[in-house]
Image (tube, rainbow over all chains, first blue to last red; front, side, top):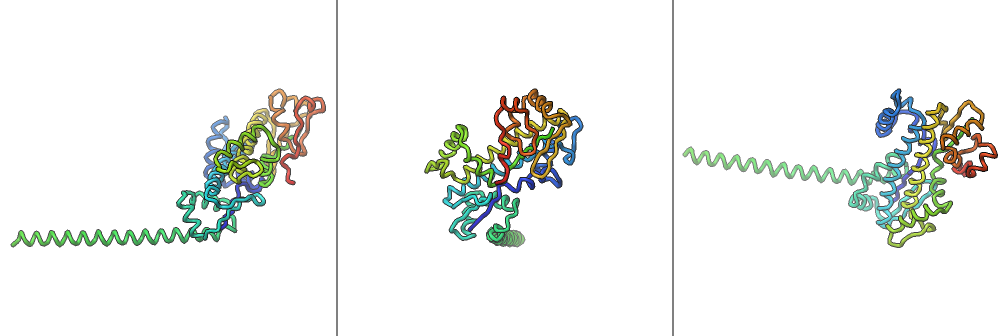
Length: 173
Length: 141
């Protein structure tokens, strides 16, 4: 399986993300908090450049911190990681299902999936379908388990009803 | 007077920059990071995660610095705009006067290494007293 992460986008795109709306919920919240520091309480659209750069700092700090942690764990698994043209390319000889199962075991599958979606890397999308399959399997198993529990509960209720009926008949006679 | 800053370089440039120039702080940082790996990697064989972490540190420090300097300039009435991937700060005064203001504010030394092409640099006398600016340090190769 191969995954591609893009920790940093084009600098112009990164700056635009904090300059022109719609802003991400995190950036919106950050601007709201920052506006308290100005006497005229500017809205997100009128925010000064200094606050926008600070917002970019926050966004990148979170994203890069998360990616660093995820990549470090993946390196510990023995997977190959490289930087190719600004992208982080992660490779393993495992199949998609095996690899995603391992990532789930490590508790980082959701983190990685979020990062892949954020950057929208086309090459990584087919691998997501493997994950979707895993999720589908999990859903199917959950439904089967629920159905089994429901059947057990129904049979227990029916058994109790029959028992009560037998007792009431016994009392009646 | 006009100042041009580039807060963020191209991704590949940012990742390379962390090992381009050696410094005691960077060496100490990588040495600390290497403790987390059984094979104790050096700068020459730096794992991707350590390189990412170092780039994150550098960017965080730089953006924080630029944000702080811009806040002071905005408070002093400078016009600050985000143009493409650059930040342009301008004020309708001569370069000498503008730099004198920056020196008074205590941000001239911080600002100089961050300046890009198109900036009004300080006069020769002032430049001799301050560190050499790394103009275009983050410009694409």
